Length: 404
Image 1: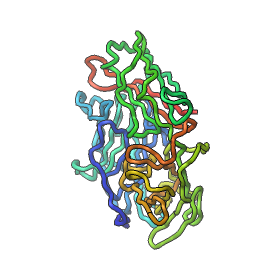
Image 2 (image 1 turned 180 degrees about the horizontal axis):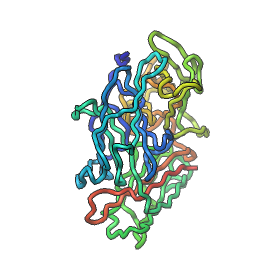
Image 3 (image 1 turned 90 degrees about the vertical axis):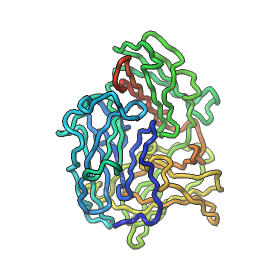
Image 4 (image 1 turned 60 degrees about the vertical axis):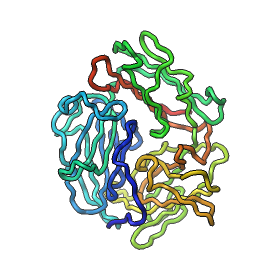
């Protein structure tokens, strides 16, 4: 059944040059996940011997012949031009996805598709950035979705420190990152040209720091210390909810209802935080699951309308819901509208059963939940290396760390 007459979905088919995101470009493609070693909480970075799975639903039981196309990308996510396909792929590109299964006993019919890389048909030879685009049949003009991940050959080491004592405030509203890169076996002649670094907080693209130049150079490495660019607003812990049973409210769910032809879940209304209170979260992650112990979560979970609300005076500019489950940022499906009578922002999003983290973000990246230096955040540092005469950006180092 087609359920999207309730809203206007606006998608951008051209990802920004600095993106590392999972995006869908079809109204009927939902619940896109990229899982490293089948772990929904891991960052999209794998090493040799590991695998990555790209999973998604198409909202019908009709068979669709989906074909995947793989690109190797530079550090800035533009397509690598100095390589032949045979340089980075072993086997064949443009192969069909043959692992799919219809949903079972759900009100919303859907088909779950799963692509695992590497596989018997396609191997990945090089480190660096990879973009996978999914097309239907032989249509190569408009992808239905794209998923992006990195393969690392960690040969440079990264030492990093996080502190609430920053160059602009002391244990207030920011966190500052400092890190040192050791070259290891690599002979780096010109680090300004040969190295490219990326730093992300909670995998957000709107606040990522790219191409930062080191302020200290040594014979065996470089340092990035006391850099204003590496001071991040600390934010607050993510909100969260869980729906395991469509008949019973789960964590942070006020009530469940059935209004033909959909299930509806109304969450407890949020209010902006006045101070910091620790609450364990997963920094924006989502996990598909339900309480059916005998079934497969990916094919027995229901879809339902989830209703969000934030009680606050009207803010300057638009407000969005955000999480790793959103279709990038800003996602027009997650745009909230203001209810003057209730003095609250509201949004309804069609989601699959499971556990979700979310936060509220303004278009400029600000949040009504405030910034507190105690907030537990995930930081990712990526180090790319292209020696003089090299044809592609190697991912030679990465570090995933959490504050506190």
